[in-house]
Length: 332
Image 1 (cartoon, rainbow, N blue to C red):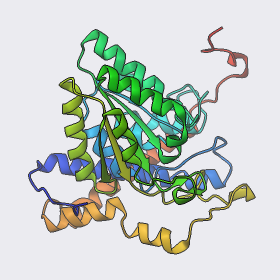
Image 2 (image 1 turned 45 degrees about the vertical axis):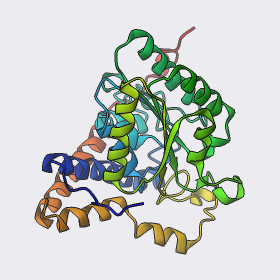
Image 3 (image 1 turned 120 degrees about the horizontal axis):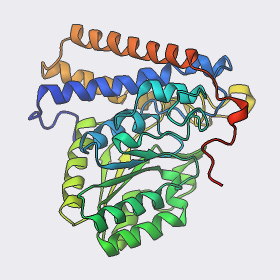
């Protein structure tokens, strides 16, 4: 895998937008730590810190009309696709002004107005929904591409293989994005897979697949552009395995909060991946290429911090759903 910055032919405004988007995700995620520990946030939160480059790189290659489906760890996908930060934070606080009206919480985010068609906690649960969206796009001939984000644990679910087979058979415009962070909940990948090169699972279906550095936003963006172009030209699907790592526990700030889990990852491993922090790597790139000064990066961080603070204030001021409206939005 090449190092960050192998291609410098990017417009400055695009690179700055990558930086701001990754900052928005990271600072928003980290702002949930204290409310979670204080008991203000009642729903389980699977934080996306450390994996920002995947969501930002892939979603930057899409248009607003393209579709994205997420999973249990989808705060980053939602924000990168253009979802409202206020709407997401309010949802995680389970407030009426949330993107799912406070009924869904962290794992049920949706913003159809920008193509984020939903997230769900069932492992591999939205892969088939993405397949359906891609099939609909093909039938309508509207040129839209559908992206499904899932973790390495989802590769143990049969629905993924069924969907890859059907997608390949119909040449559907779908991009399978596996965010391989090396752990299925608390199970290291080496203990649950004989073949650790996950992207190879797509080859028997005749699907073009690649393994890329998921902490290199430029490499992810390049791969995303190529995948989108292939799908729009009627030569999909495409499978991307993005190697990355979550900085926080499987759920919540740390797995051992309230004694419910134990984070068994070696401290040396976590420290090693923190050295590969996608935001720090990109800051170095922006500095070396003289695209942003340290002052400009500080200003961006201050502006994003204010946005996050405002979103939390909005969420706390928003009312909770009313008990008498418990069955509202539920289909009979």
